[in-house]
Image (cartoon, rainbow, N blue to C red; front, side, top):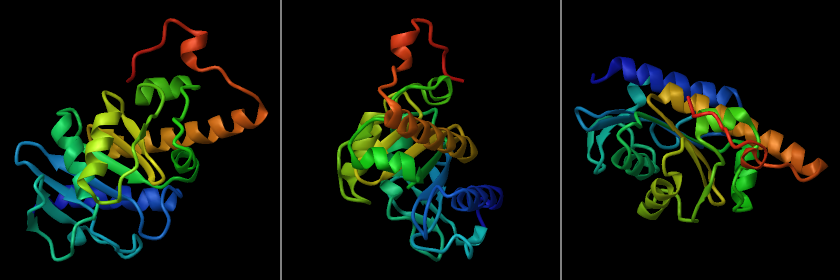
Length: 207
């Protein structure tokens, strides 16, 4: 079996995201990319996270050709592929439907850059990619175009995508995004918060 360690890592991330409420039922998908081989290890389509085992994960190339796996890959594999193609620094992707971040996505409203942590770990406000059908080339293209050099992007009326050097790093970003969205929601119920760019000219570089 190819990539036994990567399979375990991606499975562990998927279960952690489910346990922490970043997804419901079988939604969301996670992957790790082996850039040297041009292959990604991705969660399968529609499998319960409580039942998912490392051997259930699928290995495929960026054109969608399955190299190893008995189950179909996530229908969002194109989203992951576009991100890996666009930026060489991306080694892991976490696509979640976390409630507060997704609430902003349903409004086509960026998560504002209110927190130092969002600036440091994501690069600033989390922008919204244009609406496209799940699993489509257009969804992947729009997400890759919108994310720019940041570490997260919202998918209009869909969810959130976080990236990192590894799938574990991507999950950390996903947690920061959801936390920032929750705090922004609370702040907006009280008043009109100012974004960091308005209060400081010396913003820290992202970690």
